[in-house]
Image (cartoon, rainbow, N blue to C red; front, top):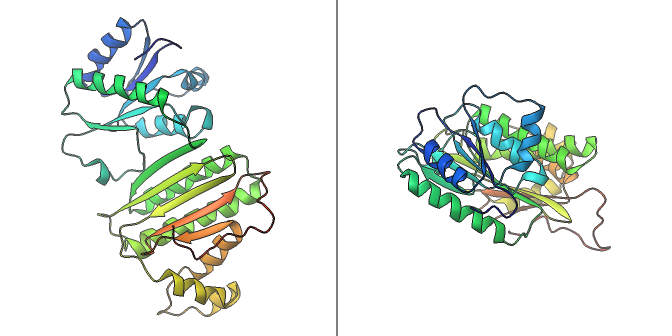
Length: 294
């Protein structure tokens, strides 16, 4: 860890965590500041202001407010690159961690020694400061296939849209499109199987916002499906539904109206939604190929 621009580390750990003394001693040996939050933490104006000052955050996901803390750091673009180390129980596979989680830059289990966690923190901070910045903001989210977690993901996406400065109408229709894509992945992809996971990739560059939703299903024939929906209106899709018709047809029309591009991967278990940023106009004559593979 470096003090070139000041070192301030936040830890969100259980009261009996063996990592706390090691991290605190190391930060203090470098002349840095450690803000240690426990179960009694509450948000106030000072805490909100300090969010921007952290060089790194170490969080144990078992602490009740840990997810909200990380979201508060990662949603605003100005602090989204703050590196996070997420600590899981030794028996937990992070890839199967059901609560909606903004995937941290480093994932470890509590089977590590305190010295090892300090070493990981030093390495991550060094990498973060030298890593090329290809996007203005990027993050990965994982969640289990449950109604509550899908709803939380929708609320989180609403906050991201607001952060980008879209007009209210665009926020509403893009939020609906995202919920449609995620809901289809949960229902048709994972079959509401709570043992299967959903993965969301969110990226913003100087021109556009991209969100990619992937489920663990086998996919479907998206080419034929889109061709069918392109040949009928939203009204026809709604009135023509039957028990044997794949649901989500009306949702496709809504997504097409809201987004500047919709694409699927080859198997059909990943959907790509793209929206140009407010104020950006694509080159004349360019059209998004909605049927192309990723």
